[in-house]
Image (cartoon, rainbow, N blue to C red; front, top):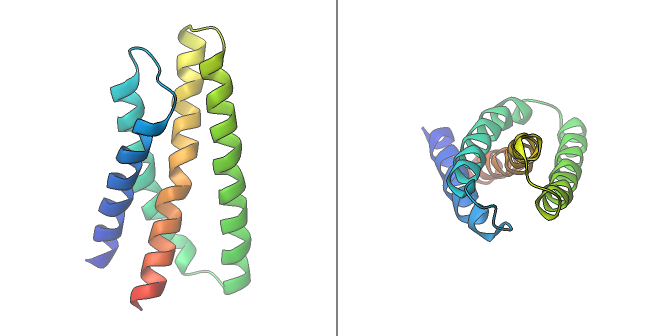
Length: 115
């Protein structure tokens, strides 16, 4: 049951954090929805990562953090560029990749603290 609570917390945090992203005209609600779903999915992945060894878990968390930073930079790059349907699709992908690590980290850290 506590796993579901951490997934809900990850979804709530990502929904709040999407409001601090650069504004995209007409896509604000969809970006928030994608970020929330990605964070909840990240929580589910975090359950799988939790079963791995310590060093493998640390390595995966470093990779996940690097992915989050790269996707944030790419998101800002797309927002600063020319709008279009291709740009919108890229924003969806970068949003999902940005908020997936949030769910993973909250799930792994939360379950470690509560154990």
